Image (cartoon, rainbow, N blue to C red; front, side, top):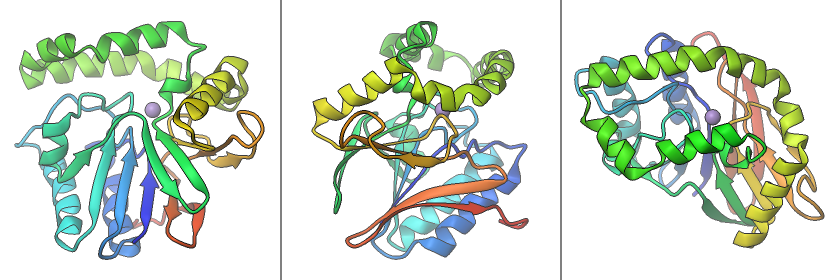
Amino acid sequence: MATFIIADLHLSESQPILTNALSNFYERNTILNDRVIIAGDMFDFFVGVDPNSAFQQKIKAIITKAKQRGVITMFQAGNRDFLLDEAAAEYFGMKLIKDFYILNTSKGKALLLHGDQLCLHDRSYQTFRAIVKNRFIRFCFMLLPLSVRTSIAQKIRNKSQEQENRRAEYSEKILQNPTVKKAGATFLQKTGCTLLIHGHFHVFGGEQNAFGDGLSRLGLGMWDSHYSYIKIDRTDFKLVQRAMEKNF
Ligand SMILES: [Mn+2]
């Protein structure tokens, strides 16, 4: 039994190559009793299940097909698909897991989180996060028709796109920010873990002692020209990055 961790696929209707890549990922890597954990930002944005969407049906089919051959998929919410709740996860054939998820590995306890939780240096983002994570606000938003939710999300997305592009250049710097480092150390100490696994920053790579002595970090990259994953099994623990093939 192996555990695969992927994140930041940013699947969208306009990028069928990514949906294809997900399908190939399952086909080529996973076998019976494996599990795949998608650690957030699986979707470029998500405002609810749309049974009429061929795009969503395709993703559902990929995950369900894997499930039928014994591959479990778990989903952890990111900052772009935080509205994907338990019921939505079930629709796609996945199991929703907590924002802070502990994995027992041969190398000790690892803490898995999407990564936006580390951005404590960004107060306005944390305020936004607290609002959108509020159950009542989410409940109200989900009462709106899907078309209205989609257009609101698109407006927010367009606005934040520019910011995000700019942010990408600084992601590596953000990871070195003392406040972010402190947040990572605190999360690890509080959960008794020694390794933090995350996505969100789109910076691929590991960093030994990133949060202090013996407290390390493994970062997953975004799926675009490359894709990355972590594979953990009884004997192996590896962080892999591969070029996206044309038909992948
Ligand atoms: Mn993210």
